[in-house]
Image 1 (cartoon, each protein chain N blue to C red):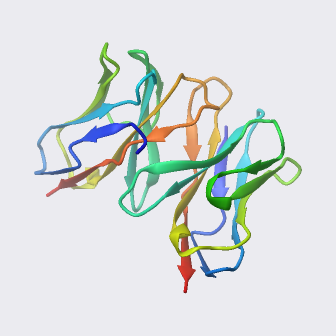
Image 2 (image 1 turned 135 degrees about the horizontal axis):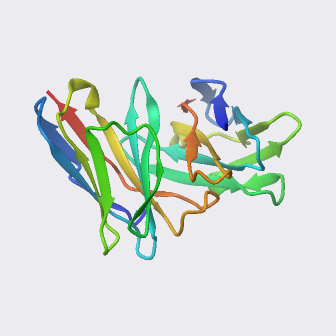
Length: 114
Length: 114
């Protein structure tokens, strides 16, 4: 068990809808990362937060947004969903924002857009 | 810009034989390098990391990797494969230029034959 909790584990929704994915980082970790994993794109970095502030942005679509709350949990909001958004979404956390730190991954949220 | 290339998308070995998963990186700075493993329906778990200390890095479950700057490689090895090693393996380079990104390779799926 990595200590990172993601909910829900599975989500099935329709095109055009909006969903929220939730991540609770490991106790004491200040940095949260979101990744999208799909068969054709591999593991894509979406966005990173550190202690409530956005720190880095990757290949995140404008339809997607995220935030990190004062209690350090994070939410990834996906709107106007398309079939191509179906993927496994991972959250990871680390102690701080340094890029030589170990990442701890949650078990992911499997999103299916029908 | 930094990048990472995993040279094999699939590798098959027999149980008890050596494992070699190849990774080449490109980096303008002194990189931090990682190997992560993903078992089916699980999140990613760190196997080992290199951060400019010893060039031979020992990880969990008998895996090790050697950093070779002249070859820009960070290949993952294990002397004797076990059935439980069947999984997907990701080589990761960190962006130490200040953009706080971890860059993932496309993954190598390891199959272990009985």
